[in-house]
Image (cartoon, rainbow, N blue to C red; front, top):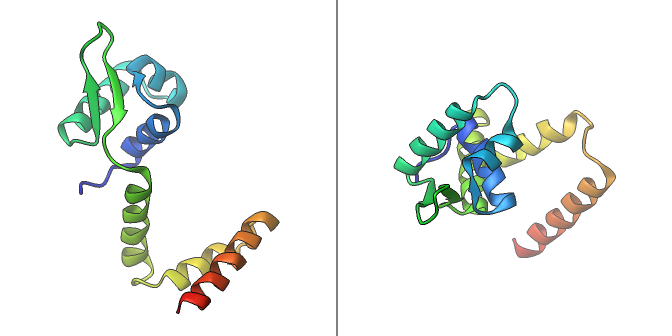
Length: 121
């Protein structure tokens, strides 16, 4: 699977959350310093890479994600862990939690996940 760049991931997040959308819809959400033509060009390149699909049936082209969100995010995290933490998910978790930014709810979810992983091991 071709993994998206940062800019492509930003567009995919919009499509995953909103569903099929026009270039204008995507551009209005990501906005910022990105021009409309840059958003259009990114979507065209993403289509060539098969990251998105385009519906040409209407005058206004509609784009939708062609790749699964959970699978894509999992692949991105795996690549990050491999490249930055020598494949150690534990080292990533310790580093991420060490800065104290996790909420109580997130910590509770993590504890539940750890209990489940220990049970399954």
